[in-house]
Length: 173
Image 1 (tube, one colour):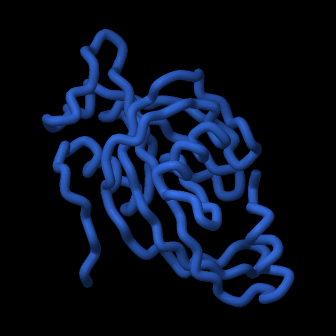
Image 2: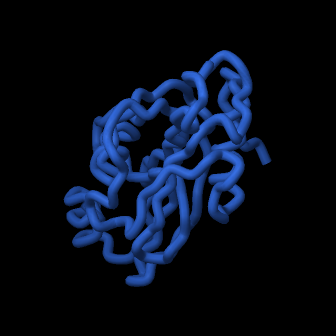
């Protein structure tokens, strides 16, 4: 689903005015072929894991799975739901990575949104990735040391997921 129904309903009332929305990003990891299971207690070598990336249909950018948290939904549950909806994979959310403000983002239609993004690291459980809902044109696992270009926010999330640090990052300036 590209835009949740509750957002469409809000937009009918506020038009293109700025919205403050909860969002989630999930860095989904699995062991690289021939590698042992992921040890979440120790830093991960990029070549030892694969990271699920999706290519957005709207702008062609590669990203981890992202999405909007539904009203009343827990962010970690939203991350797992988005992984299934967008990439057709089941995951286990393992760790909070960061909380940060993203935006404002102005979309092609003039809508303006700022997100409070809650990012997680997750373990891939099952499913072969595919662009399941039309928001993405490609969905694939890349080895951690061979990721496609991504913006700084997503590179920080991947680095944090690989670090095994249990504390979350918060931008303070």
